[in-house]
Image 1 (cartoon, helix red, strand yellow):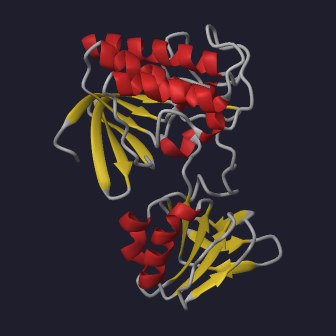
Image 2 (image 1 turned 120 degrees about the vertical axis):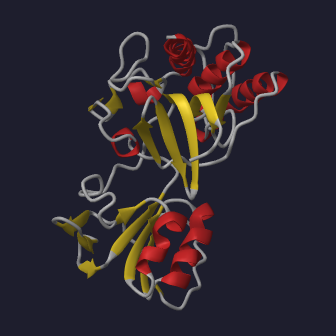
Image 3 (image 1 turned 90 degrees about the horizontal axis):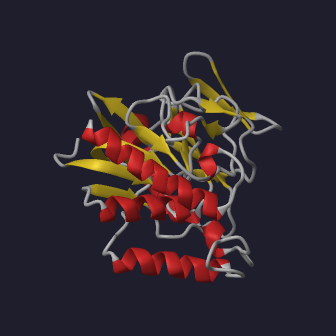
Length: 285
């Protein structure tokens, strides 16, 4: 685990993450913010936003610039790491990002809404043949047969890494322009529909047939809340929170689209504000 223990770890960008980070900064907390930037792709792609107070008829690109300008003015920097697991431990949290491990006294989840639904069997077989981290678990499959399901081209380096270790690799790239050249890789242009196995993963079903594997690596930039934090209360795919943005786990808060509708930027920003203040109140106790 990281030697440094942060007061707050904020996971996710967009208006919720930005709002939480701004408040943590203003209130002088030692925090770390995991995000690829101030604005998510969803914000940047918005054609026109009409209901953001004081910014009528603003485009997504301009809102993204405004959010970044605000965080830059406060000297707030984000860490471009993908968190694959959050684990409560003795009054604090351990956050796994690849082979790195961070620690924080409280966590705010600003995850947005996952567009890719989990594969049938993914959640129950996680840690039993299913992994989200190539560098963490790749060496467990030296010379073995594995499958890789990938949703973003930026993870191709991890696919190549897995190909250098495993004996046979079935790769399902769900993006355009894939460039996977390893001789032991077989491309399957379909998304897995079901994972087969009882106590451990045995095969991956692609709908028109199965391939027997020793393991499956799922490489994606967003994870369902239930797989990210075991024991987290989720209802209809959304994190259950109260008005203070508290989850059922002490010290863990959530804000933005991941808490439910309406999926609106101003709602997300407001919840990020509340979550930050609630986290600070929790720390004071």
